[in-house]
Length: 181
Image 1 (cartoon, one colour):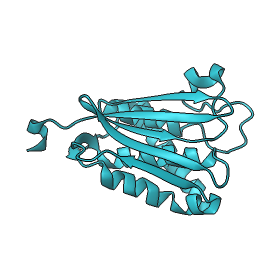
Image 2 (cartoon, one colour):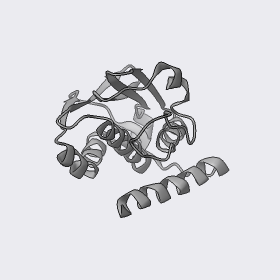
Image 3 (cartoon, one colour):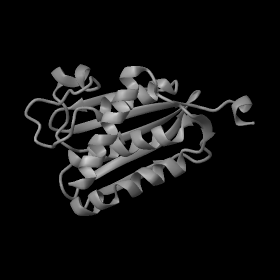
Image 4 (cartoon, one colour):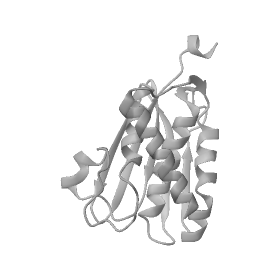
């Protein structure tokens, strides 16, 4: 449970930055591939433990995105971790990355229990947890994710069907030529 304690401590430090308005963003042009690799590696033991397969769809020739690498890796790691937590053993999580206009979309889809429709609007609220959830968590991960992504000029959203699963969408701004030099 040391891992869980470290995660909670980190989330509390992050939420402190969010609440005080002192989030430090180190925005740079970056390739998204290494961030995906990091998030999958960080979740490898949970994936193996639950025998969950990752279906990865990575569009070729993706442009650089203008992000804070560390915070984007944290968000993606959190989304994959949540998808694992709410998925059944032996299930599949889809992770798709593609360009949409002036943004790159990261899409994380699980086949878990889904989120009841009446809670979808609250899912990114600080400390919110779906009532009756037995999967643990602090209710901070998604709110911190939203703060981080929006602080980078991105967007995060969710679609879910209760009993079927959830899809989280993260839109990241593409780095302009000026930012890349």
